[in-house]
Picture 1 (spheres, rainbow, N blue to C red):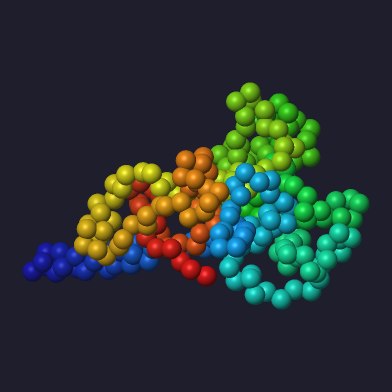
Picture 2 (cartoon, rainbow, N blue to C red):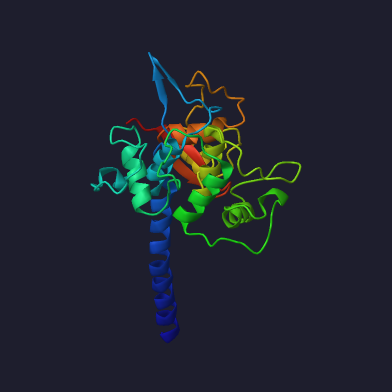
Length: 262
C-alpha cells in the first residue's frame, strides 16, 4: 500500500513538474518579430536598398526599434544639443533617446552627423554598449585595429561571432557599412537568423502544417531591389518585414508562418 502511495506521489510530482515546462514551451514557440529597419516608398513600390550605405541616423532607428517596442511612445525632453540635429529630423526622437541612454555619442566639434555614413567600428561600439558586453582589450583579433579607439569593442564582436574580418585577416574598422551588412549583424546579435531555403526537420511543425494548423510563409520577391539570390535576402527580409514565427527547436531557427501588417 505504501509503495502504491509513493508511486502515486511520484507520478503527481512528475506531472506537476512537466506542466510548467510544457506551458513554457508552448508560449515560446510562436513569436512576433517586428521590422526594425526603415524602407523607402516610391509610388506603388517599396524599396529596401540593401547595398546603400547606412547613416548614423538610420542606425539610431534600428537600435531604437530593437531595444524595446515600448520605447516608441516614451516622452523625452530634448537631451541633445548638436549643432546639426534639429527636431524635424526624421530620426530625431531615436537619436535623442539613444544619446540619453548613453548608447550614442556625437563628435568633439558638437555635431552628431545624423546623415553621415556609419563605420564598422561605430557599429561595434554601439552594439557593445547596448548589449552591455565587456570590452576585450587583451587580445588583438585583427592587425589593423591595434590602437584603434574601438579596439575593445571590435575584439568583443569578433570573439562573439557577431562581426567578421576580411579574408586577408584585416577588419577595416573605418570602412562604411551598407544596410544589408548592418541587418546581418543585428540579426546575429538578436538571434533573428532566418534561413528561407532550409528543409524543415521539426516533426511537430511538419504535422501541424500537414493538419493545416500552420501555413508556411512563401518567400517571393516583394521588394524590387531585393532579388532572392542577393546574399542578404534573408537578413533584409528579417529587418524590413514584420512577421510571426514558429521557433524550430530542432533546426534552431525561425520558420515564418504569417506576415504582420502595420
